Amino acid sequence: MDDIDNLAQSTPRENWNGFWIWPEDTDVERNVYSLFRRPFENSPPATLAIHITANHFYSLYLDSKFVCRGPARAHLRYYSFDSLSLPLEPGAHTLAVVVHHV
View 1 (cartoon, rainbow, N blue to C red):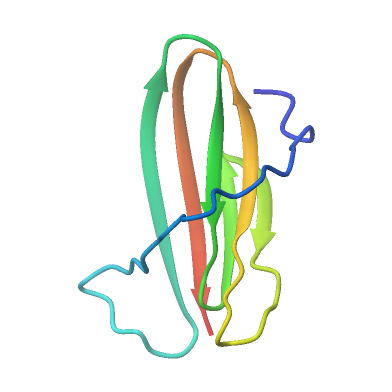
View 2: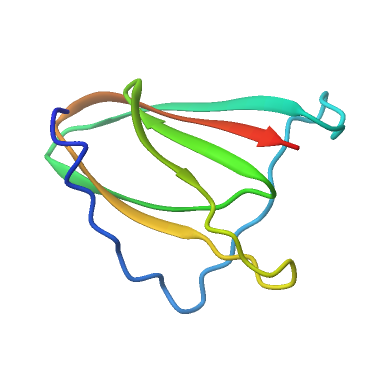
C-alpha cells in the first residue's frame, strides 16, 4: 500500500455507536501506553472505513505505515471521532493503534 497519503474523510453514519476498549490486565494509570493490533485479509481491492477516537491520544498504523493521530480536541461531554477511508489492495494487512493515556 503505497498510497497512504490519499486519505479521504468519510461521512459518519448517523446512528453510529462505539465503545471504549482497554486491556483487562492493564491499570488505567497516568502515562500508560497500549498497543492494539488486528491482522486481516481481503481478496478484492476494498476501502476500509474507520471511525476512531481515544480518551487522550492515539496513533493509527496500517501495515506498519503511519496513517494519522488524534483525536481532534473536543468538549469532554461531546467526544468527537475521526472518520477515514483507506484504500486496500488484496492480501494480508495489519491495523494497529498505539494509545497513550495521559
